[in-house]
Length: 417
Image 1 (cartoon, rainbow, N blue to C red):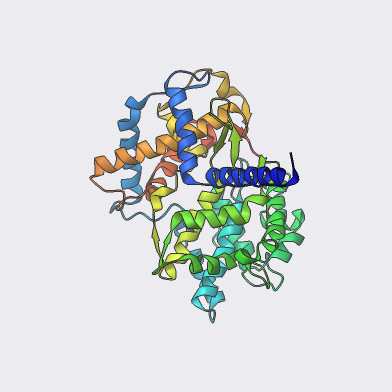
Image 2: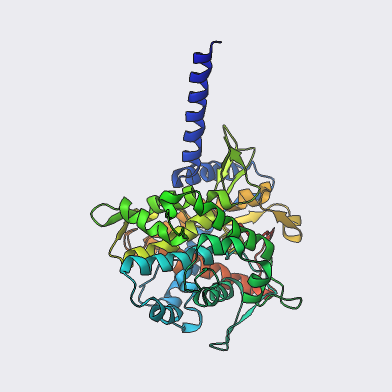
């Protein structure tokens, strides 16, 4: 083989690998690969799970009951980090606004991007033993809400920026220490937080990575929030597709995830293997990246940007939505031993559970809309998640198990859930 032929083959291989990476980063790939596993399970091939779609109506009724309790007028906001900042009926973000006085609208949005990105990356499951005592309100908060408020207070105090302002910048994130994070989150021997080292590593890696993508995060003083400027440049006629936001998140942040699968040196992020999948055996989820995407939409809307294609993104395959499906009988466990042990996020059990959750959330959403007589434009998936399935999953877990723990336990390193 001459040098020219070898070079051409290498170029074609690289193009093919780049195409695979682009595909695995798309919402279409999430639904297609999860759909393959869903069909495989429904055909009776899984030793772990079965699905009972006759329970869809019952589950939809339960979700609707929760929605009407939480949002009687059906005016449901997006499922995003901003809801957690409002826990206890406290309008915390309003207390941030005075610190942003004098900034341009785009700079205010950049600060909110900084907050959302850092807070979401700190949002993996906290465990049922940790809590945060909020001095300002006297509230004791756990789980996602506690993590949100702890990160919000650290942000407002300037802990993530060299200049001490409510911002986050690359160089401060790289220098953040575990002692500083533990202090901000009130972690000690009596108040342990699952995966605190993993959370710190994510923020430090975020600081390193955003320097390497200046077109996304800025050439001078790189910040997570500078992504807002990139996205404004992608908008047309003040409109921006939700999938475009996800593309930017996956391009800019995929390298922060530790120990993940790679193709041609590209970190795939929240992508896992399962032998039932054709071709390459890979199943993408991008749970935290989609959660982050949902959380970036509201600051963009505040700038007058209309978000299109909301339902191109998928439901979030995490333990509240997945737990709802198990606890209400949509997913049944074939081997009771699954309930008695914890499982790696890379295990076939967790990959199957998450894939089923993605597809079932779409089916639940369709059934809920049919029962309420609403369209996908009136009630997009991101609102059903908020209204909704996530809250319902937490509610049924609290009814069934002490501490509201999920039905299936996952070994968390603080970087996936």
